[in-house]
Length: 67
Image (tube, rainbow, N blue to C red):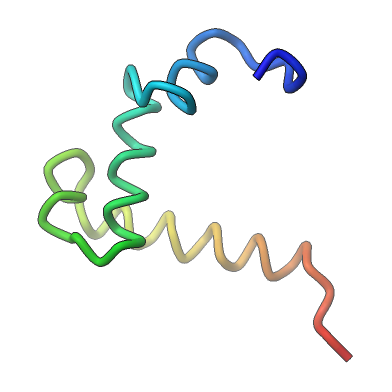
């Protein structure tokens, strides 16, 4: 993690799933696995679904389409 120059809060979230950012990460991972009940315990399912769709759109915009 030191190579990424993240602040301690983000590093703790990514490594240990601590803090509010860690809770969002846990919810996102549960959502990706289809564990919607587990995901909704941390973040509202509607909000998480919307954020997930936005992230996919953003990723698609950054990744060139295969020819």
